[in-house]
Length: 271
Image: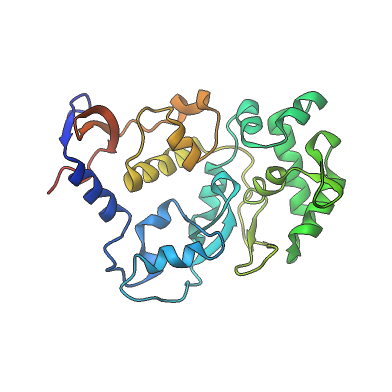
């Protein structure tokens, strides 16, 4: 299809495409074969089990081929274990501005003169030293606080203590080769055996992640749509044109011109 041409779709076709792309036909035979795992399944208070059951012909245990980690937006997600190295590189901040845009410590870091990427690397290196065995979140947070500058800390009223901001702890864990032990509350951080340690971003891997998101959800109006970055990577919108995958087609859905972008080669136009 000519990428400059508009694809005419009905609302029913778009919904049908999304149901099929997200595997909601309830005909899956195994959790580790679900296409939605290309972008991960969020697990909050058991939500991943519900999401998997909604896609399978019958409930099955979560296979060992899946792993739980703090990934997209710093939230816990189930992913294929084999994808974690590539995902760590895909979610590595693209720039200082991008790194600051992702964390809740940005104001304090700017005031202290801590560059975004420097702060991210400090946290990654510290977590690699801290989490060498299963470690509770509280212990990991306390140790990370001792290993990082004051500009990355906040006073927490509920804890009645000063510790690192939440995203200063969560976001660097994947790059530090850390996953989460399932069914633990508070979370237990576990070193991932044989994990590759990225030292910078992989733009191609991030483009593949964005394309997988579009294939699954079909929910972007423009290359810098907050919908994409809010769901895939909370990156600075200024980075959007750099990582935007060009393999997309414009579409008209329900009479709303150019409000959808669908990955080329998809079957959204089929009945």
